[in-house]
Length: 363
Image (cartoon, rainbow, N blue to C red; front, side, top):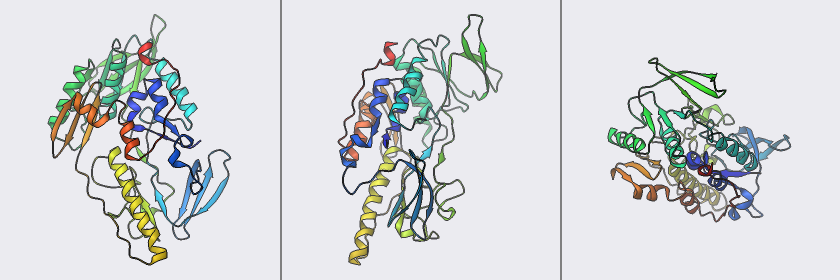
């Protein structure tokens, strides 16, 4: 069953079964996705022929191949992210099963949990885990001397993030590059992990969460003429594919697979989607009317970031500088890691049914 998952909420969904159930919404529960002119296919696009305007699709259920003709194509297939940054599941039922298994495994983590990687995802996972299970020893290990080290933001924002993360009770190890992780069995019969870092430091933990995977654009189905050397889609400011691809005026792309300056953020991806929708409409009405389309152009995204840390958040934007605190958390994330904000921005009226399940704080 085709679905949408609120990826921004993953750091909380990993440890909160009730919230996780809310963040995975089936298309059947989204009224705006229904109608005689809307068709859903859960499957994989294997190839796009931009000359003939045909897409080869493999149905996810029957595994049959089909050829779908189109007038306009929008590529918004996102990045492949490894668990736990993104779900491995392909259905809501499978996702819920994974979350139940994951959350229950922290109940007896007597030797603590180590999160490897001090990017935004690693920081948020560490803070949320400590907030939900305060008695748990949570350690974050990062290979650099600042958190958020790959982000083009001021050091003051990175320093404030470190300060607030430590305030939550998370132990933070800077300049600790992981060399290897091995499985061990203690004399008490517990299965643990031994971590060894590049400086020779070793530690033992009940659980290890890797938050350092390299995301890969899901663009293999597009022609090479549309992609850069890393597989990202090269676009014009109108978010049309660049010239060089056949019928580029009828091919658009949006979201994280697009090669565009700035930090890849949820709000930026949604803004791209809105702009593409407006430009597609212009292209659609051009064909019967002959009227030259008035295309909107995407502006370069300035470096901006917001990171949720338990009951606080840190934000950086050029116009405001570095801000932090509980009000900042409410402004950027609300009470549900921006899930309600995203629904409102996309004008979706879906309501999710929360299953009766044990929250991780009850374990």
